[in-house]
Every structure is written in structure tokens, then in C-alpha cells.
Image (cartoon, rainbow, N blue to C red; front, side, top):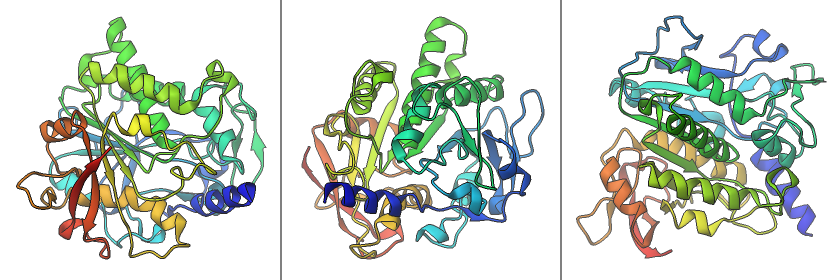
Length: 357
């Protein structure tokens, strides 16, 4: 029964949610990974070190999204973008408000490495190049090929470092969904280590990291010295908080909070500005849609004023909530639970109540 539940939940969750036709076939037939900058209407240009990019300015505030598991996506020629209608979200350009506010908006792609039938095989690639499936990648014909001798964490750090080298702004935010939350944490740790070592400008250290319906698999991992993934993530977040990085987390489904599926990692959630979303406009079996809701709800929430905590004049957490308020929520003792607006997708009518962590 436990095995069946795991397969059902994760198979549904792997169906998230990209756009077909936004990218040319060659991107799926050949190995392609790295940083893409976006403009209005899902227009895009890949970041190439040393080259100007139509959708990037060195001085602007910056938000970068990292996706999660991508089982079956390459054959379907799907990649996640900023229109999430196929994931149950609104038929809107969710980058619009960010771009209008003067942000650079990007996605760090690792989709061909993440295209594995077993989520733990994709997860291992985040941390090591010598996991169960090494660094194999999948093409649009469904065939696998051997990949580079570097982990996804190392590859994305190299893309980030090379393409953000001339950054002169002071506001970088990283978003990670599902497995991508692990990458958001790993990437931020690598950036922090490089800043400490003096090999990277402190301007490149993210100010804020959002963990969107985060997933961590159960059980110790040999490639982590027999530690749990969630355990290592907790140690990284604990250290990064001392460097001034603000962490927020949003739970929208049972994908990780059910012990049959993943590690709920309550210890890590208690270290963040933690919000439990209730996407009750989806029914009980729409697990994939609920899992994806954290992404588009967060992106969309930037279009509206911060939500309130019921019965108070205090603000709850959202993409629009200030860094200082989010930090205060992170360092507090309460979590936030969705109590109004739970049957409507638009975040504008959301309110929350405080509850014990």
C-alpha cells in the first residue's frame, strides 16, 4: 500500500507543467541547460557569458526560478515557463508584474537531467555526478546519453557565476519548486562559500530564497555521508541565515508532507517564514495541480498587496511582502495558515491566521 501511494502521488506530481512550442525542437534533442532570461509573453534569450542579453540588465533586481522533477517532459518537448495554465494556474504571464516592476526574470533549467522515472535518481544528480544514474540526460526521442562529470548543483553554479559576473544590483531572489528547492539551497550555499573565499562578489549572494512546495526524499544517502537530504538542507539553511539570507517556504500539497512519499522536514520549515496554502479549488485527487499551485500562487502574488493576518494589522508572507517583514516572520515562532481565499485562485483575497509551528 505504501509503495502504491508513493507511485500514485509522485507520478501525478511529475506531470507538472510546461509550455509546448515555446522552445525549438533542437533544445530537446541536444543537451541544453543553464540560465535563460525572459521578457513579456514568454519571450526568452539564453544567457551567454560575455554577451549582451535583451532581457537582462546588470543593475536590476533579479528573480530566478529553478524547476523540479521532469519525468517524461523531454519527449513531450515541454519546459516550464511563466504561463502556468497547463498546471491549473491562470492563463496569464506571471512574469509580467515582476518585469513591470523592473526585475530581471530568469529560469535555471536542468530539465533533461531531471527527466527520470524515479524521483530519487533525479534528486541524486543535484548533489553528485556519481549517483545511481550518474549524470545521464534524456533527448526528445527518449534515449539517454552520458552527461558531464559534474553535479547539477555544480553546473548551475557555474552558469550563475559566469552570467552574473558583472552584476551591480543589490537584490537577488531565488525560487525553487519541489526538487528544485534543494537546488535553490545548494546553489545559494555554493555562492556563499565562493563569497567567503573571495572568488565571488558579495552582490551575488541571494537576499531571499523561496522554497515552493519543497520535496526531500526519505532515508540516508550514501552520497551525503549517510545523511538525509533534508538534514543536509537544514544545515545549509542554518548557516546561510547567519549570512543574512532570508528563507520563506510555502506548502500547497501532500507530496512531501505525507511520510509515505517524502520527508516533511518540519525542522527546516520551522527555520523559515512558513506558510500552509490551501488550494481547495482543486479536488482531492488533483495532486499535481496542488503541487504546482505553490509556484504560480507565489509568482502571481507579486501583483497584489501583501495579504493580512486575520484580526490584526500585520502582513502575512507573499512575494510582495517586504524583505524585512519576511525576515521577521522567519525569525518568529508562528507559521501562517491560509483561511480565506482558499476557493479562489487569485491571491488578492487571501488572508491567513497564525498557528504554532
